[in-house]
Image (tube, rainbow, N blue to C red; front, side):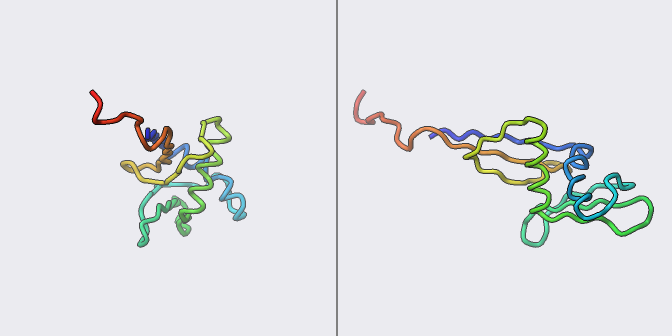
Length: 117
């Protein structure tokens, strides 16, 4: 079996673009005055994102489901190939959100008889 793994890492700017539809669906401004972006794991080990705002209003929080759907949709919109049968997982790489894409291919057995030489 062959395991292919890819990490798609989102810059802060790209993450804001990806999460814009979520903001709009909440009725919030699509371009809030962001002073800081924090990506972290919650108590259950799920990726969350927090936008701290420079106007002093409450931070904007995004749960793992929102972030996952947003980055998947953003990849599709940008034409980044995501194999249909692949395993997709959110992770944090440094201070950035990453979408990890894993795809297994090939058979489980190698077809090589170890007794033959």
